[in-house]
Length: 120
Image (tube, rainbow, N blue to C red; front, side):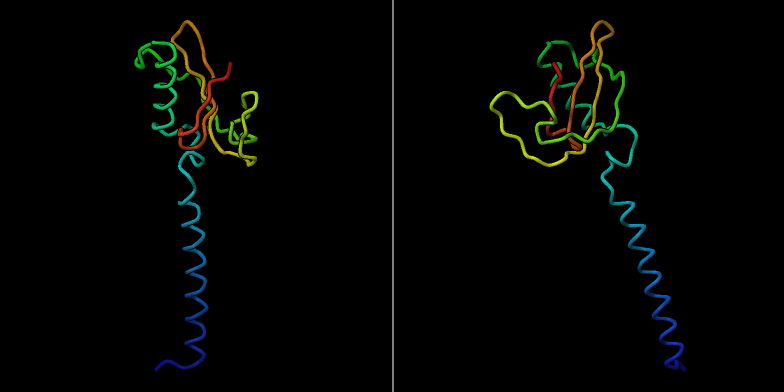
């Protein structure tokens, strides 16, 4: 038989379990690019493909020299062109250094690689 005392204790235990589950889910739902010390493959591929188009160097010859998570000051990733309007919000992303063993290039990306810019 369930008494009021037992019922209220089981509710408290259930609430604690729910809070623990929500905490664990919030850790798991962090964007992969921000939870990992290395950019997702899609971000790396986007930077390599963009650089290959610009330099005519084969994607296969472009290697990552370094990568680090970065918070950019705006939607232009801190590299606004003259007269360009940028969203004024912090953007989580990556700073990726690519090389062909002769020259290096530095890319700035958002967390998904959809927005990327080559530093000049």
